[in-house]
Length: 124
Image (tube, rainbow, N blue to C red):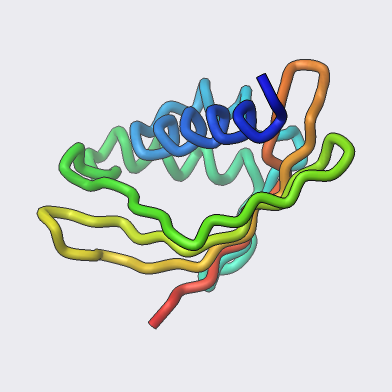
């Protein structure tokens, strides 16, 4: 497989795991220094997993009826590093819930592609 098809497949697994609240899979795909920046601030990997687990336990994580839709995706790959840029939205029953512009930083390790950072900006 090519790097582009590999990263696309890994991204799909990553997003599926996130929406399912599967922190075991997230830990395999997210680099040890992974972080998220969003309008809410910066969140490291450990805090992120704790937040997900708590929400799952309280039944306040994503409903199975919520889907992700992305457009304007751009993949920039260069020597075991990649940037993925785009625009996406979460949708429930055909209605958009939240729209975000995003930037992901990826690196190819011995075990495959891992995401190092996710930057989110709300689109109004």
